[in-house]
Amino acid sequence: VERQLHRNLLYKVMPRRAIAKLHRGQTVLEKFNLVTIFFSDIVGFTSMAGKMRPIQVMKMLNELYTELDKLVEKHQVYKVETIGDAYMVVGGAPDRVPAPLAAERVALFAIDAIELVKNFRTKDGDQIFIRAGLASGPTVAGVVGSAMPRYCFFGDTVNFASRMESTSKKMKIQVAEITYRLLQDAPNMTFDLKKRMEGDIAGVEIKGKGHQITYWV
Image 1 (tube, rainbow, N blue to C red):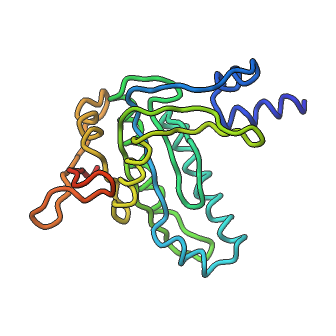
Image 2: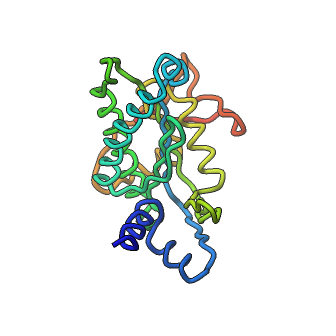
């Protein structure tokens, strides 16, 4: 029973085929040509957390993440990790699906996440706000560490998705141009995508990327 519990817990934190490779003593390293990555974080989290007891912060994040985890299941995307108030999801890996379908799934997850947060309240009845970002491109995934092994994603696409989130706006989902193009070919859904405009200027300045044309979904 204990061994089964251990196995079930492992299946929750990394893909089955990664676990199988680890059991065989093999290195877990995979390349993916075109995935879509989602990042979100809570706007003003640091100041909010400073006004709450640590146990309250943990309870709030646990309640929020439990609901987001349900959306992960619903949209068949993969939850990579949570770091503090940041939540990371990928579509098109570790289970490979066509890139437009992966982008569609992640975008639908993001839209549902925003709707979820609109109705989410802390124990004190306070509303929280998130911002979100999506980017698409190649990535490498693998298991790192031995004491506490983790299935992680690496590469420029991860960094770009993180920048899409950090330069997004409250309760908005900012998507990179390549993700925009993939969503134009989404197999099951037509998305209402609007080019980001700051006055007369399209797009936004992204650290390490320069000026980028981006879109709201």
